[in-house]
Length: 303
Figure 1 (cartoon, rainbow, N blue to C red):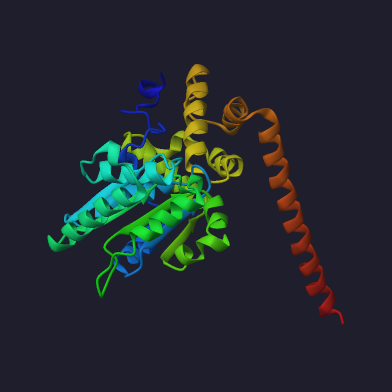
Figure 2: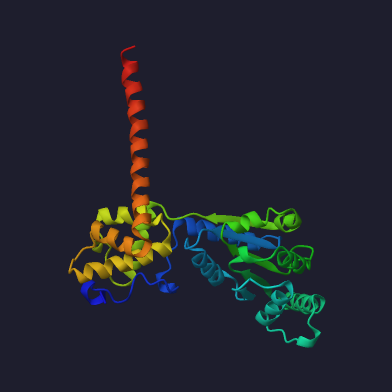
């Protein structure tokens, strides 16, 4: 609707995972470095956690792009499975034919271990990536651990990447999963974008669509971080709506009141009001602390 009006060639804030709009902030790069290092180690697991919308998928896609060509990847996108269903899914992902009437944990495990040994003999690495891993049942996680038991003198033949929300961290603290937790060679918790990173994120996506960050006023950019908390997915939703509202009102620049109106439409008035009030309280508290220290410093001059 607003593309021609703002001189854009494409929707810069679509929530579709278009690799052309991939923005790797310093935090995303650090997360990628941790995972890459973990996969190069001898352990069986690496883990990436973060709140919804912080960019875990962005990091995982970049990780897949950087894996060597001699890597076979199995993806589990729906981990709400039983142990038997998970092993069957791994077989599907690895291209292993099986007879359903023989389905059992041992049957599937033997097939997978045989494939891992075959890949190793052919100089192939095998990586299993599990998204939304916080939904895995403890017994399913234990089954994954058992798959990583096959190893050479130097390394595990299966590397597992667990990607999930913070609840995954709590899940792995359970006593029955302590052996798995000890095998995690790298873990990283992805935090939201900082205020400067939010501005850089918006500028990057606009530039890909042949636009310019000046479409958003400076006060609007500050409000974006304040209201969204630096969550990329929320940034996309609110910026897209703000551009639509600015177009309908024929404004050449997205001003702060328009952005706040867009945020209220998406998040609700109560949520926006709470975040604005919370930000004001933080600034007042900071100003009070500064004033106290300044007062103390001035007072000491006269002692």
